[in-house]
Length: 222
Image 1: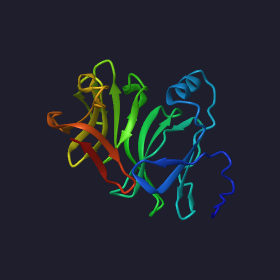
Image 2: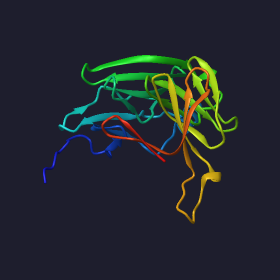
Image 3: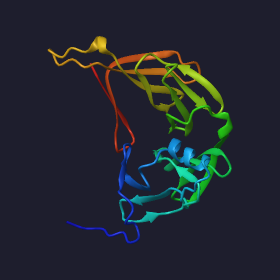
Image 4: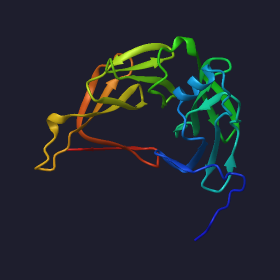
């Protein structure tokens, strides 16, 4: 078995992306959330900053996202169409949230969205989705997905959560107890396809949606 050695990365536990087998990433530390870092910085304490590194299966490491004090990075998401990574960057020095896109082929880092933290009521359940990269927040109390830039909401059904966006359609999964049939091995999962602009339901399927390493999605339905 071939062993690839990466010197200087003893802090990193390598993680997979669900939609590619070409790339991996490591982030450190992993035990603090954006909310916890915000609380610590709000008390005047210093956060050393998140460290993020990307690894190609060829064995090359990329460290273009530099560690900065009081800057928290979420785990990245991968967009196969543009071969780029999207990262949520919380800068508690400037009190801003940024969505940045990193393209390893060009070694470029671009800010694609920026929001003042004063405009965000709750930092919980914020995530980045693709494609393209968009900052969203799952509002559990309203059963809604909130797009933060520009601000708008799409109201969802109970137990429905967004998976990804593709071709102006929003794909989500929903746990539906009414479909559960334990004795006959029935499943209680649905896939819902909505218009991205209006939120109108276009299609609904029983079954599961799986992101695959080649960048496709497999719809397992009846």
